[in-house]
Structures are given as C-alpha cells and as structure tokens.
Length: 378
View 1 (cartoon, rainbow, N blue to C red):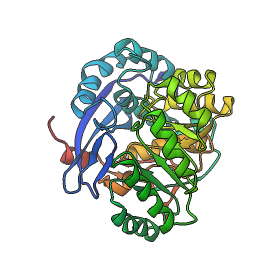
View 2 (cartoon, rainbow, N blue to C red):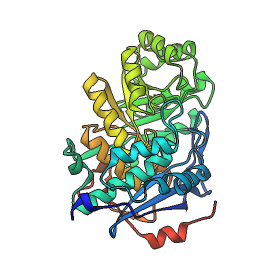
View 3 (tube, one colour):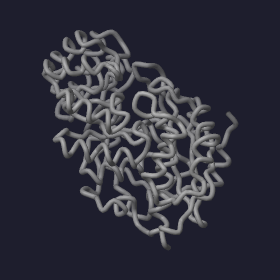
C-alpha cells in the first residue's frame, strides 16, 4: 500500500473500564485501587480501511488530564483538526495539535495527543506491513527487562511485595517514595534492599521534596546502592534541579520535568540533568518521544524507561521506543502488575522480560468487540 495515499478518515475514542489487580499510589495520590475499575481512553484512527490503536492513561494524581478532559480533547478538538490530513505526515499532525490545543509552558494535553499519535504509528506500520521500529529504521535490542514496583506499602509489608516480584521472575525493583515521612520512606527502601540485596534498585519521589530534603535523603539512599533518584523536585523547579544535581551523590533522573524536547534542551544547557526518563504519553506520543530520546543521546544524557500503568497498547508503544534507542532496562512499564488488558493480545512478558513485538505496527491485536463491552459513558 502506498503510504503517501493514506488520508485520515476517522478518529474514534472509547472510554473503557479495566479490571484492577492491585492498588498503586504515588506521592500525589492514588493511581489504582484494587477492586475498582481503572479507566483508560482508547483511540482508533482509520485511513483507507487500515486502522491503528492508541491509549491514554488518565492519572490526575500525576498530571492534570482526566478521563473526561482527554476524551473531549480528542473528540471535539484533535480529531476534527486532523481528519483529511495525510496519515504519514506525523510532524505536520504534531504542529496541528499545537495550534489546536496550545502548548502552555511546554506542551498542552500530552496524554490526549499521545493516544492519537501512537494510533497513527500503529496505522502506518500496519499499512506498510512492518513494526514501528522499522518505520524509524531503528531497533537495537529485542527484549527489555522490566522492574517490579513497590508503592504504598509499609516497611512490614515490603518484604512480601518483593518476594512476590521475585516469584514472578523480576530481578529489578523501583520504589515510590514521598508517600510517607522521610524516615519511613528510607525504611521502605532499606527493606527492599535487604530483601533483594543484588537487585538493580532506583527510587521515584514524583516531585515530593524540596532541594534540602532531597539532598538529605539522597545521602542515605547512596548507602543503599540506589542507582538513580527520579524526580525529587517539583517539575518546574529548574534552579533547584541545578543545585541538586551539583550536590547530589546520586544521579538525578527527570521525568515530569521533561514534557517536550525543548525542556530537555533547557536542562542540558543549564548542566542540570544526569538521566532523562523516556515516557511516551508524558511527551505527547512517539513522534516527540523519539525526538527527545535522540536529543538525549546526542547530548550524552543517559536514558531510563518508564510508562504510565499502561494497558498492553501503551506497553507496546514503549517497547518500540525503548528498543529503538537501546534502553534495555530495567524499565518501569508496570501496567501488567496493576491492571489487565482484556482487549489486547500480542505482547509476551516472561520472568520480568518483555519481548519487543515484531509484527506490523505496534504488534498488538485489539478485539474491538471487547472494547465495546468494556466501554463506559463519562
């Protein structure tokens, strides 16, 4: 099929309720609650009989976009703006998105934009019969190690959580901190280290600390052989991040601070970053995430992989991005630990290792009948 002839005909959005396996929280609040459905927004883009799927993961405790805002942003603004455009013109679609929903500080409505952008990548891969990585001409690894997440548990509960992860075959761990007082946070990390003495281990504060607090806790985390301290400060504290990076004994990784490639450029110019976290939805999709990862590589900034408790559609998108840039893990792609994806097949995860899909597009087959069964009204 000639990609140049593909024109976007339809953009459909579905709000679906997914079964939740475990509770999950970050310093800003709850992400999932066991026994309560977890909401995702799925997007299907169609062009000349070919379709592609994308996903948005509303987490108000982590960012400002809600299920309702994502759904209406897509259906009322983004979809009408791109119907009739060439499906292959990803850069042009990104520019249309910025004109339709303005950038704000660096990017506007990234989760909503990401769902459509990922669906376009899936569509183009399917139309040309190749995986997403082949579209880019980039795949450096074939499998990616995943990390088991420790979040919200008390020190007494942590050992059981780590044991469960080890039983599932995981050999790396990420700990969410900032959910308790600092002493309890450190006790949680210490318990993880004692339960998994040789495991790669890093912590994520999700913007919970001041510079003074972050420096104090970083010194103790160093003794626990933590390899990275992720997003300790508020996302917009650029000056604080520069001070922290200069004094911290641990490499500081930025996540929420890096919405757009221009954000990364700012931190690089200020010599204020050790590690850049690659996260598809946070950066508005694969188009901008690919650019950001390339910029990080060109600037000598280390890359670490993460996700947003995605279902298998989002998991596949992350795997293609990380494989393209050689981010072999451990990566925080934790969706399967907390939710199920009844509508999606095609992703293999075994003993904490995820295989990068090799079939066209994202490599995920979506059963639209199941999507419609799970669909809810917002």
